[in-house]
Image (cartoon, rainbow, N blue to C red; front, side, top):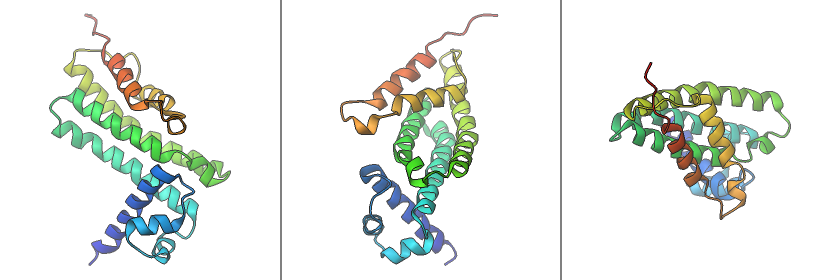
Length: 186
């Protein structure tokens, strides 16, 4: 019985993330509750305010993205395939994150703390995947993991506002470029 409240909260976070992707962070709480199969009161019991829900979803998504890195590296056919699959998860996270700043309504300290935790958690995961992928293709990355994540983020800006813009394809092309620089002999 100890795991049930945690599973329940994880289910709410998963449902909220899915709704945020399709309807934005301002989606009605009733839509999230319906997706989770619970009453509105259950949402408010776990997350009394919208900003608390948005932040919890964001942290949940960051953690899921971070945990996916080592799992993909262990399960994928190649380190490059693991990096590419993880990058797709990261792009999805960026879509979910869209609108976070507006939901926090001027809480720059809270927003800065979230960004710091995002960077601290995901840069090392990206770095490990990038290093393994580069070793497997005998390449030297032209930039570090922080800049790879920043570049991906920049490629994703505005993607949700333009149906013709294919951020995922552009991000994968960017990764091809990162992995294309051959190692130079010392």
